[in-house]
Image 1 (cartoon, helix red, strand yellow):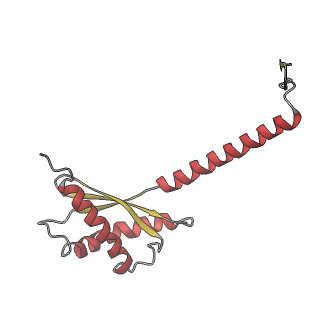
Image 2 (cartoon, helix red, strand yellow; image 1 turned 90 degrees about the vertical axis):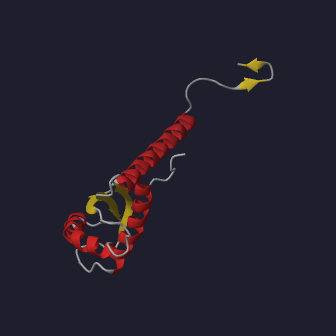
Image 3 (tube, helix red, strand yellow; image 1 turned 180 degrees about the vertical axis):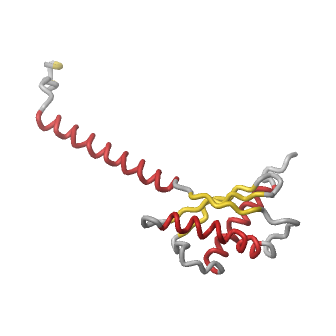
Length: 143
């Protein structure tokens, strides 16, 4: 029976927790936003590379680029700090990628809310003005 939760997934979950902790406690670079969240980690099957996806809540203009540069510069430091915590023969290369899925989701949600709001106002306007067709029903049936 194959393992339902491969080693690369377990290592990815562990790296996600530890990198989050290291960024919060060990990384002192002022360019790194305080509102950073490690959203996911993908580790290659050979455990040689870890793609770390992060988001920044309420990012100001330029903050995203500064954080990205700081994380790329701190990758070696974070890898060195991760090594004693990770009980593997080698520590994966850390690559950081900005994850904009939360921003895209919020944008899509706003578009849907606007569409629903305009649809309800259009329906209310049609009911107020009447559609021109008499849809009243009497005892004898439709008129």
